[in-house]
Length: 196
Image (cartoon, rainbow, N blue to C red):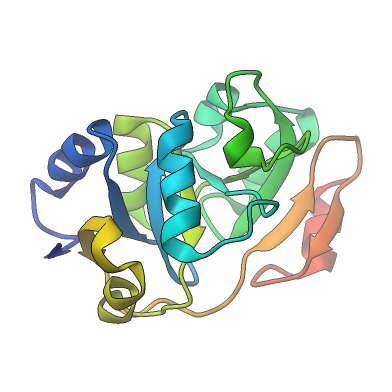
């Protein structure tokens, strides 16, 4: 396992090569670090579950580079567009209807997929360069702790310094009005005001 700084010039290319080979990498998110793999590869998703001890009925969030990439994984709604314009990139997860090619392992068999565009520039660039990434959050606000939790499953750990430790706000954006399912770093009142 290799620990690299997010500022290294070739880190996106190195991470892309590993992900393309079905490997996993630890990447920085808004609140914590996450173990990530190819969101369109069911085998990679299964490895994420095994590596983190995540329950099989707990869906994996999918990381995208921005709203223009949402259509790769989900059916975007006008509400999702308004919320993304207001809060992305940032600690907001949108629940949307998944595209049929999203593996059941990622959605945990549900009819929703959780989509994020994190504020960490490197993670967004990687998601745009490689494609959508499935992410299993690690209970780690620093890279070394994340490396220890990920163990041998992670071939690469990208260090972007300490994370905030704050959770994403999770919003059902499938309809016409925002339904806040979990209030996190973004207050529910702010989401509801922009979601009207």
